[in-house]
Every structure is written in structure tokens, then in C-alpha cells.
Length: 227
Image (cartoon, rainbow, N blue to C red; front, side, top):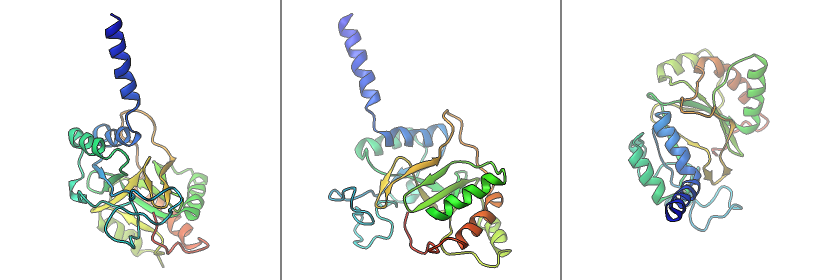
């Protein structure tokens, strides 16, 4: 009996020690049916002080260090539990990349200062928001899937759309918590509710006006490509 109890205790400890990235990736892929794949990550020599440097890809001037797919490529994104377990068992600290669009969430991202301003305004308006992803430099609002045609119609009505506001739709990707990339730790500014049900997502038409306005009024314009 002691041997059995000891074995059960060791199994529980192993489950608790499972990397946070694997748990998060499995939740996205299997519970929420969001296709994911591992990001390229940071090079072995990149420490926490190497902000903006240290991507593990071959490009020494990578604009989004650690925060993009490399091998496998974006088309490999999947909801298959066995594949997700294999990826993060072999690379337990790999960033979690969400393949946006299709049946998966899309996203709009903007500089962090503008993102905080936009959330304040949307809260003031009583707008219900979904999850919001934050890095030290940019915030991303997850929205319901949209098509390029839908987005084009919305943006056509605007006098000007700043380059700092970016759209992650079909064929795009977004890095999810609890990843670490070249600009720092990725976290939830607005976390999904706990549980197996996929997070609720607003339509892009409900948030785009506030994001355009916040981006236009950002102090630095947010022109730097950093995630």
C-alpha cells in the first residue's frame, strides 16, 4: 500500500511540474479548438536583459525576436493533442503561437500606451471585451473571426488608419501567454474566464473605432514593429 501511495504521489508531482506553456497550449488547442504551434523562441544566449535581440531564427536583425513561427511553419498549426504534447515536450519553453483567422480568433494590436487608452474608452462605453494579450510594447485585443472583405469595408470609411494599428486575420498569427519573447513576458491584460468553454469574442466592428482613435492619438505613433 505504501508503494502504491508513493507512486501516486510521484505522479501528482510530475503533473504539477508540467511546463506552463504545455498546459496553456493544450487548453488552447483541445478545450478551445484554437490551432497553435511553437514559436521560434529566443537563442540560448539571450537573457532577460536582451530586449529586442536574441531570436533563435537565422536573421540577425529579426524584427520580432522569438515571436514568430519558424520550424514548423504557420501551416502546421493544429488542435491535435498528440502533436501539441510532442512539440512542447521537446521544447518546453517555446512561445505559443496562435494561427489567427478561419475558425480561430482574429486580433487587432496596437502600442501599449494606446492599448491602455483604448480599453479605458471601451470600458467607459460599456463595451464587452474578450481576452486581451499584453507585452511590454504592444497590446492585442482578440475578436471574432473576420474576413478581409469585412475589414476592408470598416477601414474604407476611416479618414486615416495609423500604421501602428495591425490586424491579425486569416494567415496571421499572435503570440499567447505565458510565452517570453524578445521584448519581454507575454501576459493576459484581460484573462479568459477559467474553464473548458472557449472565450467569448466581440466583433471587430465593435472595437475598431476606439482602436483607430487611440492609435491616432498615441504619443509616438507606434511605428516601431515590436511585439
